[in-house]
Length: 368
Image (tube, rainbow, N blue to C red):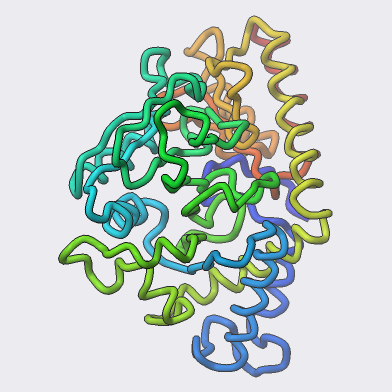
């Protein structure tokens, strides 16, 4: 058993039993005589891993027929370009919701390929909330609407799925596109409400190096922008079962183990309840204290990433050093915002969050 708890925002903690199984299978996967890292991606051994990983994900997330699951490389940042390249189509226009640094990066990249309209923004409150749907304004003829479901840095999470049909003047057929990188599979979600979902694996799914795309099949018929490379076309992956090139095989294998672990936990409904309980432990402590502060609007607080500051910032380094001696790792806030950040993804056990809460209470008693 590990004696530390890793609160890194990503690459993030993995379930301990997944790491143990990977260790046991490292040199010889199921009597094949090969490590998964050595297998041909087109061999029957790895193909069985790939097929099971995809089918388990489809079962866990209740992904309906009519959607393709793609296994890509390049991380979620590659999708900031691939989405507009593939979906802008003839209109050349897209709408984006601006809620923090990751959505801003997506906006800036999309602007390289077409016209970007900001449908809604929380910039006026320092990106500490999710703009309510009543404030969204969709531009006529837009190709899609993009939003970031959870801002990993700012700790703002949408607790609802936008219903674009409820927006005045909105075309009900507009595809909703979501960057779910940091809360993917942390709760149940209705895939049928989306045209495209993408997520980097290194938060809740597996190691860095793999990005997942779930795309409605009709969107594969949208003509990509002229000059889009073959490897940046979603249809390339869909037509070749994500095997046009060598996929990130070991990351897919680990993802498969994580999917099985999630099933053992009771699936997404059960993991959501656990995530709610973990987040409540820390937020309740912060809200009851004048020593700690979380700037995010309470209704929009992330269950995955909890940013907080100390009343005296000169104590930040003391807090981090003492936390490390207590086995609480990677609590430093993002360099752009400072303070602290506790990332408590699916694989963070309740005991780790309890240990953090106990340390925070002790630190406040000693330094308030």
